[in-house]
Length: 140
Image (cartoon, rainbow, N blue to C red; front, side):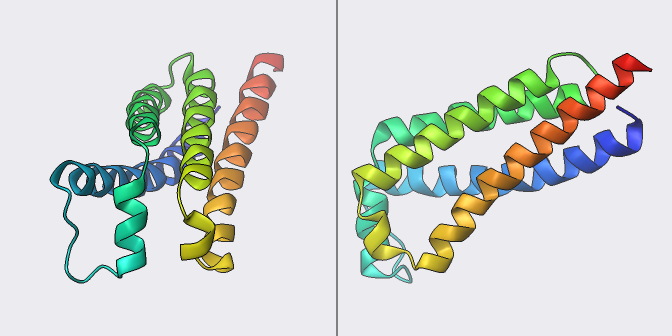
């Protein structure tokens, strides 16, 4: 994979990781403190307070693996795509757990739910494109 492609993938994944980490930080803080910001709607507060710890831990593990894979990606090292696959799978499983274990469907609009799902589709597309680019590099 050439350097330009690596950097584009790194920026796209990096933006997602920043967003996911901010969500994990705020969810962890809410769960530990047991209180929510006054500006948060009551139904969102209930969602975050009911978030299963397993889903929060899965998000943190996925974020750590995303960061490791980003470092490998930026420096053009091996195992980047494999780590990204692991991170996406853990992240997706945590998201699915949170969806089924909380009132996700009642709180978030269909548009918000679709956006969440599209983020995972986008991550999967990036990983597949990276795998194709790596394979093409090894064939030439």
